[in-house]
Amino acid sequence: MITKGKISAFQFYVMLFLSRTLTTVTYISSYTKNVRLSDMLVQPIFRIFFGIIIMIPVYVLYKKYNDKSVIDLARERSENLSKIISVFYVIAFFYFTVVTIARLDVFTGTVVFPETNVNFMLVFVIIFCCYGAYLGFEALGRSSVLTAVLVIPAIIFILCALTDKVDLLNLSSVFYNGVTPVIKTAIDSVGQTIEYAMIAIALPKVNGKLTKGFFVWLLSQTLLMAILFFFAGSVMGNFAATQLFPFHTLASLAEFAMFDRLDAIFTSVWIMCAFIKASLLIFLQADILFKAFPKIKKGSYLVAIGTVTIITNLVIAGEIERFSIIDSSIIKILVTVITVLLIPCILLIFGRKRSGEKCEES
Image (cartoon, rainbow, N blue to C red; front, side, top):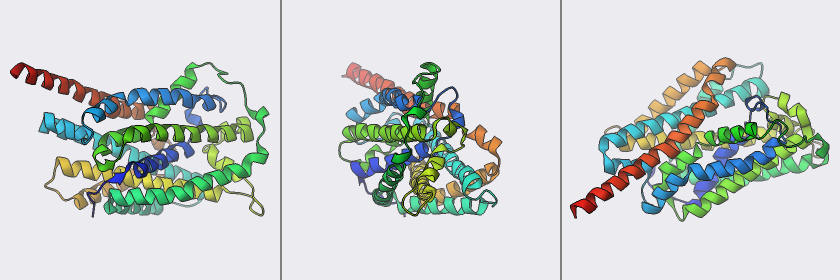
């Protein structure tokens, strides 16, 4: 069953690190027009800046009400308001769940098993992630730490195996097409980080100081992004831009002893991170719905979410055009801005008005 226990800040940010790592390693080069891999080395600087800016409202709410989530605060203002906000967060998390599974479908259908129908595998993956959500937040926190013990050394191992292929001459000059495309890509990257919204929702479920952990998480996953792009650019050069999943191609170039390709390890990293991210997203959806509409059991919500996710992904499966429409940078930016910036700002305004009314009454 879905447990009510809390996890440590360390476990929480490890979970978010793995979740965001999936977004990084599934980078699709065709989405970043007019931006070269050399530009992606400096893009994280802008991304850190935008990431801090967008989280300011959540930070202010956390400092004032450190034991309450955005939805908890909305419930104090109005029950109907909290239900509306709850539904929106569920839709946002559901959207990112669908995109996560859809990318896995594109990857397995074009790279791993190009001649095989992977629809059955998608169904199995979604059921497995629903089971992960069913085990609860504490179980996901513990699983994330164990997964990180496997994922981080695997990434380091692949990168170490690529060091002899690094050629700095493959890197072009920074800002070759100007600064604007790089800033736009940084904004797109922030939009892909639904983990910001996860923080706003999961605050009451985490013990410890979250502010310091947030900066460590932001810097660590940004540093990982910069390192991966450095290796991709210095090893493959402009060839990386022709690959659908350049980091998978990069791993296939790695060699160690008798092993000519290490892309199988990279695929394992991808799958483990996908499980953590999708399970966490599904858990949050079920948890939010149960708190907003407690008459229905949490298990029923999980079954409903899993069923709708399976149907949606089976409709998208095998169609690159449909995937491109769903996996939209504009939609992601809008969803992230609304859930992380707009809604918390509205709650801050309501909070001030309420404080002002109390002062007038006294």
